[in-house]
Length: 213
Image (tube, rainbow, N blue to C red; front, side, top):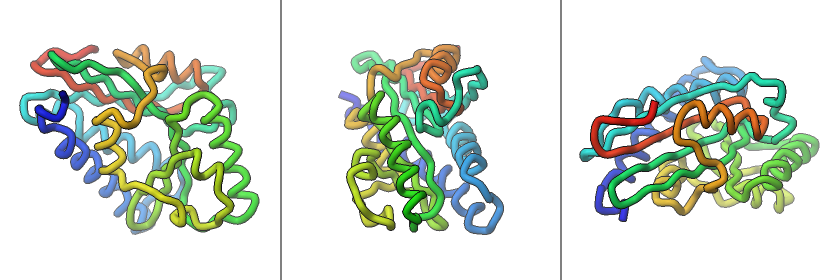
């Protein structure tokens, strides 16, 4: 049903353009570490989507951080959680995914082992787990299950998606776990504490002017 609104591709394109602006800064040497890239990427998506109206659908975007006692990446294997809430008259869904960030493509043996351990931890909680690969020219997204299953050093030897294709699939509900569900910023912060994830990206779409606080 969401296809009739015509918002999937333009929304995903806005997300992609925001991420690409961070990639350009990374290529110029303006970003050095994975956590900095992740934070800048999520903030860029928020800036591109918050209070944006596309074809009569209003988007709200919030980036939040949980610093509770359980929010340690090692507990979960994930760098951030993405949660989507769509509340349209004839289509309502709340769902999310987990993501582990990785800078560069070529991995030494111990780096691949550690990444696979992180993927294992994410997958123990949800099949909707992904690796976001930060490259000098793009961000590519790989399913955690494929990273866990492979014996490769070049991650892009595995099938991977662009950010735009990933978010198109997320909006179309090919991607997303209903257990990672939140209807507000407060609920998202609770999820972050529960799952031990530091960063959260909340995207909400609703027809009209009223969106959850």
